Image (cartoon, rainbow, N blue to C red; front, side, top):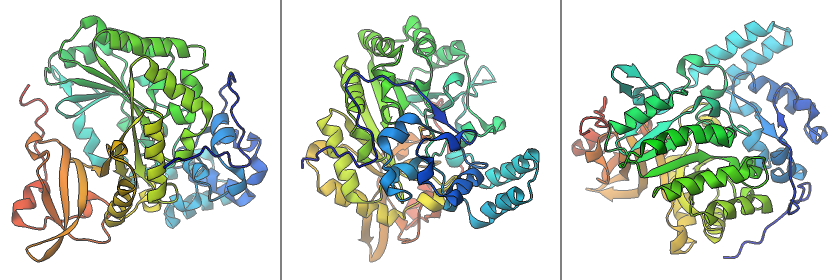
Length: 454
Ligand code: SF4
């Protein structure tokens, strides 16, 4: 399948050699967006109301190169960045709208917003249980859920070039300090990895770690490389900069330094995996994004791609097929189709597991084997990464067939199991074991064996 690049009217084409100065837009300067007249006054109010609870930020690149302003409000890139009224439950929306109407003071609005946030499951998949400790000290900017991989949240990387309206890390951005992951003590991180010889992968995550200057990112990476911990084999960088600010790899002041940093890690004998978020094939079209991909790959780093399956944005098999195919053409490796997590605006974005499987299957069927590296639909749930393999019949009973791609309990990995068929289920916690033997995959609490075997 050949997918020609498109340039919907209203989007500015990227000119080779173009440089750009980053300009963010938040609730404070939303009305300064040049295309603002394309958004109705009521929609602007909705953005301001929803934006009290869930974070809002976009930038000049997204506005000029990704959003099709002739297709507002249905445009998927618009929905990806701009809050919609329906992203809050009606009672939550009304609560904030009423406060706006009576010109309530900002601290009263903030208090009401915080109460709503706590109702939106700000800590999905038991993330707080993933915080590791070192000699009794909690590493509050790390998570260690799966034995081989440690997640690190550098404190300077806890924002993004723009915010996705579906983001499951939304509490990182809205001042919920008590549950925010972040730390800047690289010595603790290094010591923790050294003491855990099963850890092969270190994932820098956020927010977006590539919001940091290269010199700051390098200070963390150098701390790890300088110690030359032999069991640490891969540095992963979780980022959406290829979509939201590809200049980061091409023409920003320290873009060359970033590429050189990747090269340095690779020269140390390690693998660099850029875990790139792409939610829609349009994000791969601008020439600057393609140039960014080329530069990363040129030094030997690999780009693996992932996205949740999102209602209103990408819930069509042809979009996934186009995205995977284009990624392969550009040298990226399709990695995960996730299910939207049970947090924030899941009621708006969520797709039933059965539908998710149909969309995955239809997309998977229509691409060549090289694009079939994607695994999905996958739930990053409390017990592990659970893949929905399909709907089938076992002993006369209609069931969901599942397996764990990752597990807190490594013994659960790659063992097929069954859940009762439920056409309305959208998340793992909606499911029930189909047979007695499947209970072990559902019964909580789960034993975590990250450190037990270290
Ligand atoms: S780029 Fe990633 S962390 Fe940032 S808002 Fe989007 S999904 Fe969330």
